[in-house]
Length: 218
Image 1: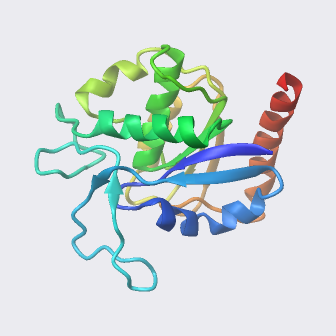
Image 2: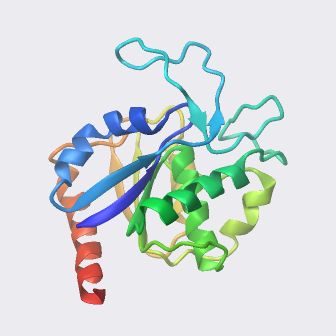
Image 3: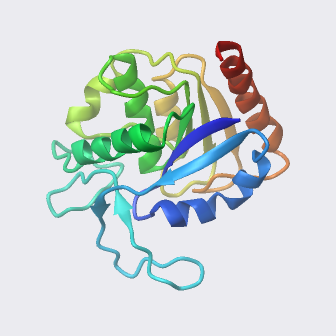
């Protein structure tokens, strides 16, 4: 069984993201266990609610503006909270790990991609063997630019929607260029992780291959 640490999107949290991935969790339940962690930064909600109408305790991995806000498509020299978020992930790996892989959605996907590069550069205290990047994009915060300078060789699965109105396909496709031989699932939907029978064989194939490699090493 694989163990995967999941990094939610901006204005989400661990509980909300776990609920949103209910379908995906069922698809891969025989292959992987998903563990969810909340980002440390509190986000001003502006009435952001879940499907039942409850206000969500929204969190973020970093802010790109000085008013403690984040916009994926705005270039910025400001990057508040990233180091704090890195410490949170380090703590989870130390206390609840090891984890075989990481899965990130939206801002969490951008964070996951940066972690892949940091690991390759020897900048992390923990290790993982693959990444699942959902609705990902390159961070446009200037301090993060160095993490896209070299091709990331870690095995990766990239999932994004053709009608995503929040993170456009061009942004997700641009992130693909930072990875060596990325596996890609492009679906016709929007800003979410699909979990239909159409995607299932691709998820299972990617994760089963990772599981076989793990068993060989063990």
